[in-house]
Structures are given as structure tokens and as C-alpha cells.
Length: 119
Image (cartoon, rainbow, N blue to C red):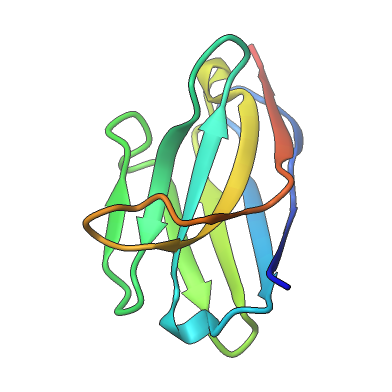
């Protein structure tokens, strides 16, 4: 059974930083593409960042140069470092597993963690 468990969300002021982490189990983590998505109220879920098996990364234009995705295969975790946060970054953030560079949306999802950025 695949499980993705996110942690690290919370409330932060604009300009602040947060680090999200996702622990994966039930998958061969080192062979699995991993991503972070987010969904704001009234909006569709969107890709934030993706990291391939080989470590290649993709970012949404809105978070480039502010967010960094990285993975630790030994610990089976993928993390998202978020700097210079803006109120528009407020959303539920979801960990995703199983995507590829061609199609970043994998079939496995975490339960989500809330990130709220106050102005």
C-alpha cells in the first residue's frame, strides 16, 4: 500500500520561508518521480515542482527562483523549500508520486498540508 505523508505546513508572514516534507512508503522511492502540487480555494490543482528519478527538476513559473525541490532516496523523502512566500502561495500542498518528465502527475497522492501566507 502506497502512503505519502506530508508535513511542515503552517502559517507564515509574507516574505517568510517554510519547508515541506513528504515521506513515502510502499513504493520503490529511488525509482519514482516525485512532485508537489497545490490547490487554492476555487482554483484547480496545479503543479508546483517536480523532481525526476535522475534529479532533473521542473518548476511552475510562479515559484521559480523561490522554491526548491529536493529528494533524499535513502530517507525516502522529498522536500520543498519555499522562500520569499507570497499571499498567493496560500493553498493546500500535496505530495505526488509516480510522475515522469513527460507527465508529472503520478497516480499517488498524499493527504495535503495547508500553507497560509499572511500579508
